[in-house]
Length: 132
Image 1 (cartoon, one colour):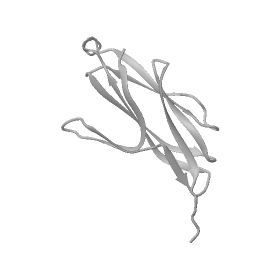
Image 2 (cartoon, rainbow, N blue to C red):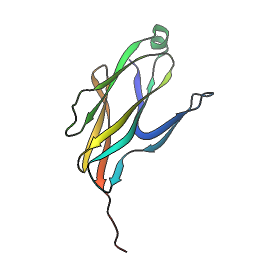
Image 3 (cartoon, rainbow, N blue to C red):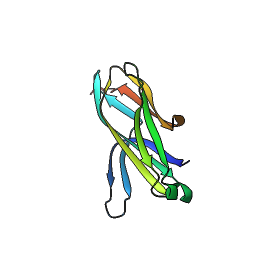
Image 4 (tube, helix red, strand yellow):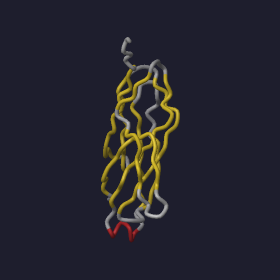
């Protein structure tokens, strides 16, 4: 079974076409907004998996899923399949327009073949204005 190397949620990413290197921009831990409700425009889920030579040679098929634990949002996981094709494999998924109705802290859970592997926590809060 491929092993999880890392899992983060960020605002954006880029992949170098030549080297296949990945750059991750603005890892999301705390978000501040002036008013609610708010739509978080984009969440990028990035995970890296390490497969054994046997898994690569067998082209092992697996499934990962992301479950967002947020009030007012169905907890149906978003699933994607992948095939072990290299020792290090980056998987990237994007989620657009996540509605947050009030300040809260929520988790995004990463599942591998329906088994929990990791969480990423994001705190959404009101901006604090400083009087002049």
